[in-house]
Image 1 (tube, rainbow, N blue to C red):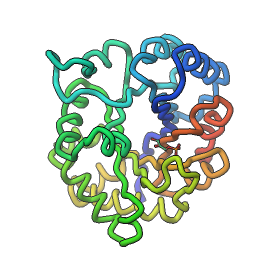
Image 2: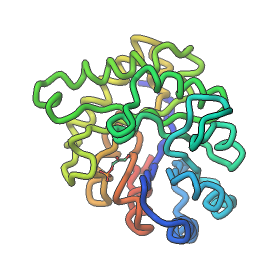
Image 3: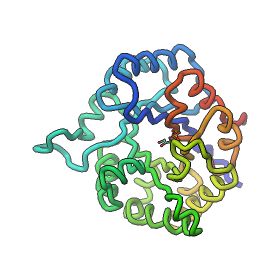
Length: 258
Ligand code: 13P
């Protein structure tokens, strides 16, 4: 039995919600509730224009970290409307969510593009939260493990073991996102264990044991305790339920006691 304690993370993905003032008020409420929990990170995945304002608000709260929801695969230059990793670094982001299914679907982000973005994020010293997960028809066909394995293979397995050791994975079955249907704790655990086994095959047990794997898809205060209590579930990536301070604090406090 390994003694590695993986980084536990409750990450909120605000998506395209909250105007600037509402976003700052939410961040301030989360700071004021001050729920620091045994080394776990609370991560706020906010729209680009909120980053600096939220960074200033959370500056004194060591357990709260900042994530962008996307970045450019390019370093800099003539890419109108894009945001570089250097820009994210300069406003205090720690994490970058990559490959969310909404970006894969609406912005045609491919596994190959996400490999480039992952490299870019790591080179900047930021931590990718790499999203993977299958649509309902794939789950119904029973091929979800192979589908997710291919996503990891094509976007991440070119990394060195050292670089892979820096990333966070988020398993987000598309059929559970924003639907109110949550993967059962057993379904989440089964996929997380399968992902960890793939990582072990590629990089060895030590890297696999140390990799934080989050579950996303209708995580709520009412189901977080059971989900986070699964042996291979190291936290959550939370959409709708991250938009209310009380609820998100409850989710952050759902990690099992040591
Ligand atoms: P919901 O928690 O709203 O289902 O969204 C999950 C998600 O997409 C987080 O990235």
